[in-house]
Length: 200
Image (cartoon, rainbow, N blue to C red; front, side):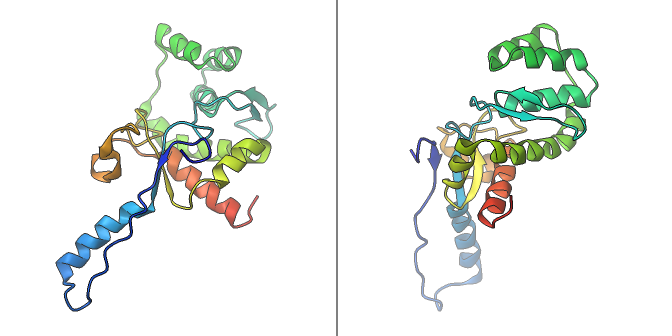
């Protein structure tokens, strides 16, 4: 546990080798192993996109800001608006912090969109949401800055937001077994780095 946030950070230092004994093939293997030292894995806690956190956001600057209760609810709303489905977008707002209710609604009404198209535009929306959230939520901002300065990797089943491998699965330490894009983790790392560099 790290300040209430589940994470895994491999802090083992690579073994020191005599430069004379170090050949090209061994050097490549060492580099591959050392890459794991740069990851910080997490799944739950305050940074989870499913965690309740209130904030206001609008996909378009000229539009009125709406109140959301989690990052995932906001992303689902943006997806519906992007595809011109105002009815579903309105229903998502009415459910407020009831994500289970939203999922049931989408399933019962067989709401689906072009996944390939959404994959290409989702990062733009998500980055905008995260930027807005760190400005408005002190707890989320503090939680993000408290994470180790490593590449953040979001574990879970969602192949768009996470790596598609659960936190409890030991295969998560090897990118070969990742089945998701880790968009959420990548963008969190980007926003965290910007905050550390003084950008607001």
